[in-house]
Image (cartoon, rainbow, N blue to C red; front, side):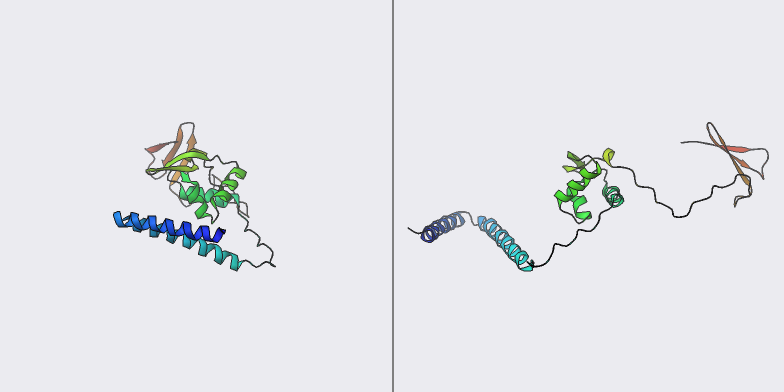
Length: 180
């Protein structure tokens, strides 16, 4: 028997079995249609991807991803932890590529982090690095304490325990503010 004949016979037997199951439990038809639809959609996507590939073209260069972008995305998504899949979607990467980026940056990936009621693979809040400080092109001059400021009636004095705010209009009282 040829392979084509064997496949045809096997297909007929499988369809007969499925028909018998659907006759007994009609709701199973929805599951079967879903499975067949998913399988068909995967085949169509693979066919479209093959048609789009141009054999003579060179692979496109990947966009450069900066460390600051990854850290900002982690802070943006933190609730308080971040799922690896959510980070990958935010950065428009595959999950494998997002994992590789985190590993390259030395950010720990845990097997189980909780976001809401769901647990999954991701970055725990304590493993998220702090946000990078924005770089300034021009240096900022420090404020001279002896020059008048826009707070003409107030003088601030730093102490070991915090700050003392003097209201120069009221010479009898001053307010203490503690360092936190």
